[in-house]
Length: 160
Image (cartoon, rainbow, N blue to C red; front, side, top):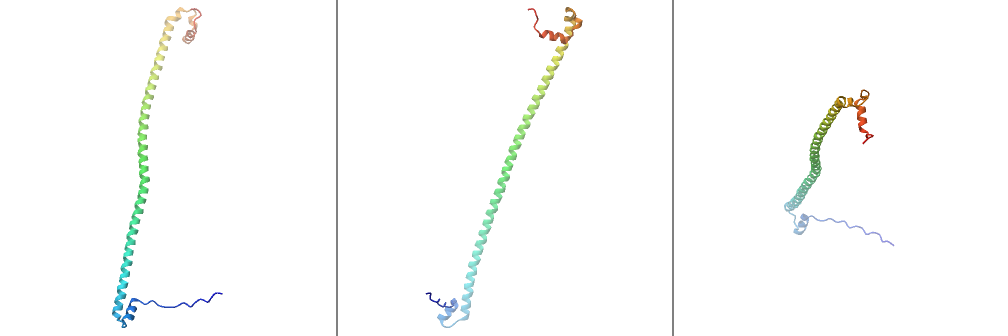
């Protein structure tokens, strides 16, 4: 069914030197070596050029990657710096607000202390007035004191 595989031909590719030798008929060894040298030199120049180009490309790409990494890191640092500045501004604003509230609190405390002192002075004056003027007018005044009198004055009088 299947035919047997054909035997493979074995051959050899002649180099340019051997071609020239076979064409010329007489082989000049020196010219052959010179051609091999030139061929090798051309290949090494091409290889060196490709290596230099690859090296330059690699350096450019490494620089680009480095720049991108620096930008990525600096972007985070810059954002942190901006946030820090915002926080500092808010802290200053809060400190100013706290200062205003402290002043207002001190003013309210001073005002309430002044009102409290005025109430104490008024109470003392009324107590003195009670003892000097009103007690002699009421019978059984020796049984009354100022606090009872104040309670009595807060109720409506039975006669109008």
